[in-house]
Image 1 (cartoon, rainbow, N blue to C red):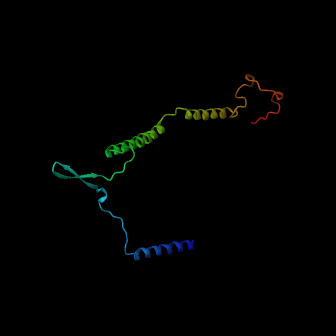
Image 2 (image 1 turned 135 degrees about the vertical axis):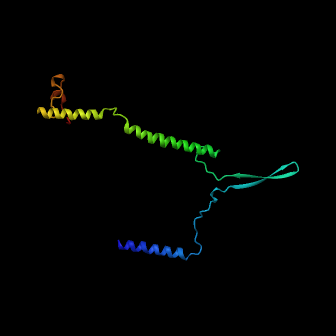
Length: 152
């Protein structure tokens, strides 16, 4: 462990020496120039006069919903995220959490506990061996089964 600490400490010291000795330290610019636009000057001739028209294009990368209109692209992005996150995940989670028990699992478990309590109070076995009356169905004989493996 001490060896790992020495290696990490040694590399950190070397890195700090290299960074402090270099004169050309590059830093991240925090200016507000990220919204600058590129302009292209086109010369358009109109009957003896020359007019310069600046065609400005914004630095815009589409989100993939609309490649021609920035506003339509942003609107489609915000609406799709609203519907997918807010409606589907939030309201879907609330619906699953607070929806009533349609498969009656709680009812079945409650009835099972009541039946177990009743059988304990009456001194009956918890699970009856002859839950279904054996006279109501026919089992195959040993001769009919033959070498068939019976897994219980």
